[in-house]
Image 1 (cartoon, rainbow, N blue to C red):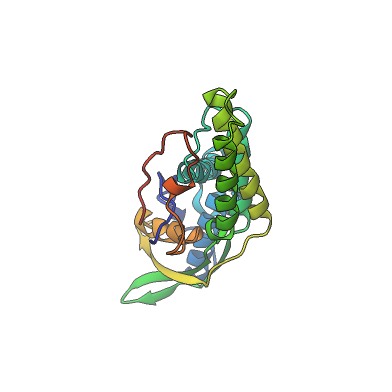
Image 2: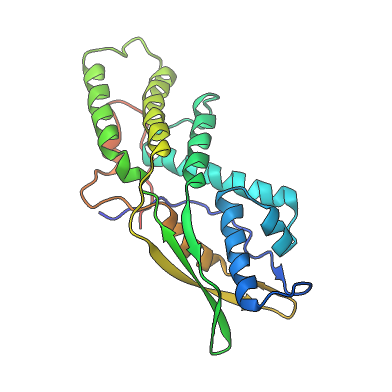
Length: 241
């Protein structure tokens, strides 16, 4: 079963890079633009993005935080965690997401022109954290369920129970984020859309890049529902591609 994390993708690729005021060739200028879009979204390095696009610094910094929060929410949904109101665990998951994104590996080639249209090849090395941590999560859930069956959590409130389970999952992700592996690189080609005084890439092209950042789950991995311990939080159905 091929799966990937999905969710509302926050992007500012439609803020156009200005064509004026730069002596560099279009090939290198478009390459730098794509690099700045990736760093702004995943690394929080917004200076080049601001310089290239003229974006507002506050908006550019908010973009990165929104994307990190998006990944955190998707991870929570994937593992069936209900931590949105947890003042300890929600920030921890946000930090896990930032740590994962900080390890993004990619290459951006110089733009090339075909039939009057410029294209840029972006090579992504998919981050393999879902597969890296799968066996640890499976073992943890099995142990957690044994504790449930022996009554270890009988005196817990539902909120305490959810917190206890989620904390263990986040522990695993925190460790996994420190020693990530990557799948084989994949390349996506994006089109530079040129206006009279500006250029940008489409949301669809950026989503094609984003789809590759976190590796899909191996075919033999369990579904998110099977990660869920007995009597834990209600499972939220996630869309998978």
